[in-house]
Length: 384
Ligand code: FAD
Ligand code: UDP
Image (tube, rainbow, N blue to C red; front, side, top):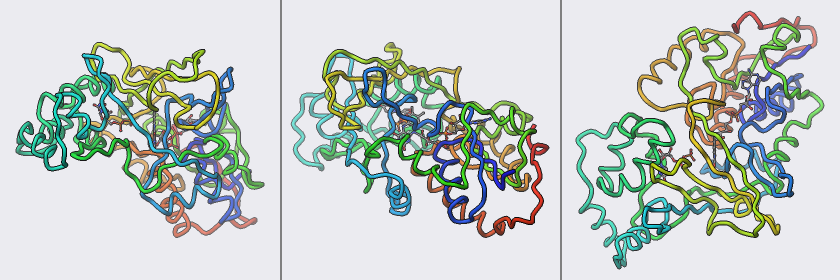
C-alpha cells in the first residue's frame, strides 16, 4: 500500500519521489521498466572501467540557481565546460556553435573583432519575413551556405525531417556568435556530478519512505499494487492507450566503443553535419568526467525512427495532437504528468527538474498529505 505510485525513475520521477517522501512524509513506490534508475541520464562503468552514459552524453548546465541548489543536496560537482567541433567535407575541424574562429578557419579569413564577424555574417544573412521554421532561424542569421554546411544535413539525419518542417525552437537551441567563445553552453552553472549521475539518483532515492522497483512496467503492476495518487513520466500517449493516435518520438541507436588508446578526439563531442555520414556525433566521456584511464570510451549516435522514445518532435501538427492528450491529462484526477515524454517537451535535464519542483508546489497546494486513516485506492482504471 502506497500513497504514491511514480512511473519512471528519471529526473522527473526521482525529483518528485524525493520531495514527496521527504517533505510530505508519504510512502512512495517508484517503478521503471528499465533495469536501472536515472532514466536517460543513467551512467555506469563499462567492462574496461570507463564511466560512460548508456543513452548518450549528458552534460548538466543551467541558469537556475534553484535547480542547481536542489541537485547539490545529492551530489558534489566537477566543473566542466563542453566544447564541440564540427567535421567538414574537407576534413577541417571547426568550432560549433559557429563563432569567429569557425569563420576564419573555414574561409581563411582574419576577422579580428566581433564587429568584423558580425559584418561578415550580415553580408551573408538572408532576410526571412516571418521566422517560423528551423531553416528560417539559421538562414536569416548566417545565410544559406553556412546553413547547408552545419545545419541542413545534421538536422535531416537527426530528425528524419528537413529543417523547414521543424519548429524554429529546434535549431534555435544552437546560437551563432561573433565572438571567440567556443563553449557549447553559456549557462551560469556548468558541472558534471562528481561521482556520476547514477550515484546522484541513488542518493536522491535513498529514503525510508521510498521503494524502488526496476525492470517493472506499469502495465504489469497496475492491478497489483494499491496507491492513492500517481506521477506519470512515461510517454503521455501510452498512458491513454494511444486513443488519439501515436505521438511521434525520434529515437537513436547508440554504438559504444572502448578503444585501446588514451584519447580518440580533441574534445568532448565532434559533430558530423555531412548527410552521407550515418551518425550525427561522436562523444568521448573522459572529457566530461575527468576520469584518468589508459583506455577511452566513445559513443556514436545513429538517429532512428524505431526504438525507445528519446525526442518529442517539435512541429505544429504534433503539438496539436499533444494538446488532445494534454486535455485528457488535465481531466484525469490524482495523476500528475511530468517530464520530457509526459509533457511532450524538448526539455533539458535542468528544465525537467524545474518542472518537477513546480509540480511539487502544485501538489502541495492541491492535496494535503495523506493521513494514516485515509483508505487507499487503485487508480488503475484511469489508464488503459
Ligand atoms: P526519462 O529520463 O526518459 O525517464 C522516464 C523513465 O520512465 C524512463 O527511464 C522509462 O524507462 C520510464 N518509463 C516510461 N514508461 C514506463 C512504463 N510504462 N513503466 C515503467 N517505466 C516507464 N539534457 C541535458 O540537460 N544535457 C544534455 O547534455 C543532454 N543530452 C542528451 C542526450 C541524449 C542522446 C538524449 C536522448 C537526451 C539528452 N538530454 C540532455 C535530455 C535528458 O535526457 C532529459 O531532459 C531527461 O533525462 C528527461 O528526464 P525524464 O525523467 O523526463 O525522462
Ligand atoms: N544542429 C545541427 N547541427 C549541429 C548541431 C545541432 O543542425 O552541429 C541542430 C539539430 O537539428 C539538432 C538541434 O540543432 O537537433 C539542437 O542541437 P542540440 O545539440 O541542442 O541537440 P541535442 O543535444 O538535444 O541532441
